[in-house]
Image (cartoon, rainbow, N blue to C red):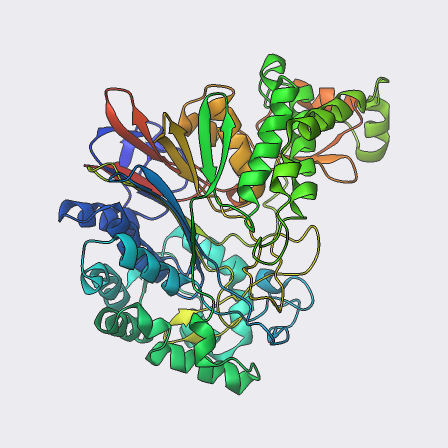
Length: 555
């Protein structure tokens, strides 16, 4: 795929700086040029924003199998212009109640199998989620929305440098299984940059999907083949399990911040409560008065601690259909004020720079290499001319039989582990949905969307940073994404942060006894945002972030 230059310092589609699209009647943003083109083409022929994200997701799982697949997870926030309501969809893959954990890929076989006992087999959530969206909001026939997926599966797409990078880092997981080896390393070799990658099996599956509808993956031939393969491996899944726990609709988790209503995924998802805790603590600490954390050691210290506190608290969130809901207690002003007071009074009042030198060496920052963690997920952002908004994620996470490929569809399974600090947690009885962290976010002004955003990659801690950059520090959406990001404060008094912070921040943290683990200046594991927003009197705008590939455009 040929990239074109957006401007003197920006590139279209590739990793790196990108231009913001402004003054449009409708916009679309994704992590792949083909996907954005398909979504805009869907709008041009009369489809709405929901049609666009369905078509985009179907083709994205064809051309970005390093990030997503048709057996993973779908989540979305939909603003319906006709009613003025926001709808939340949660269609994460689910554990089959009553079946034991089934983890066929042993630990050590690549990044997706980095811990003992996981990932485990779960039912796919991707196609049930798209079916739910189509049944409720779509205007175009299902087969029409499958046309691009059929075309690109049949014709193949050109492997980009970023796709090859991610596949090289993660393919060991799939090389464990015969079907994975055939799919990802035909002839024994991973497709190289510039190769045209196609799959006859995937093309056949996409044609059947177009003809049979989404039930092809729920009760039809693909679903039957999925169950057969699971049974052959020793997983006692049955066909009726694939539709037993349907996607869940709600109105989203809402909270207020500085005159804005923020709408995010609700429990068992952690993101809404997590962000409310972080921004609430930062507000209590008057973070803006300290300066931005890329320039202020004290601000970065507080931010990293607020992220850690939110991570600890939201470990208690689970599906309200099975557990009581502690989100209101977790976000009470009294509790957030108490957390802020603790942080104010816990800082060192003696200069600990010498301690840092003794245990880590002279305080400094230099790129240390990408953090070793899986990277997969794709975010879509679309606004149509009628005023419908969709912020959506589709991902390879939490769906299918680990390491297997059925009908050209590779599967990762779910990394759920029972533990308070596990990013994914689920229960093998009760029929609830697993806990995860999904980034779909809308910011409302006077009841209408002003901004929609989301990203893959460490979303639990990057979404609150981008929101604070916009709502607290007044940055433009693109600048808010571009700014350096950090991970939560670690137990050994280390902050991992992208190495674009001011030198005085490093020395200031050393005085507080804090060690710095430098990340690459733009670490793609820290996500890249797809955003859409309203410009007062100037139409719609959209952007795709600099840490990964991506294209934002409009009509």
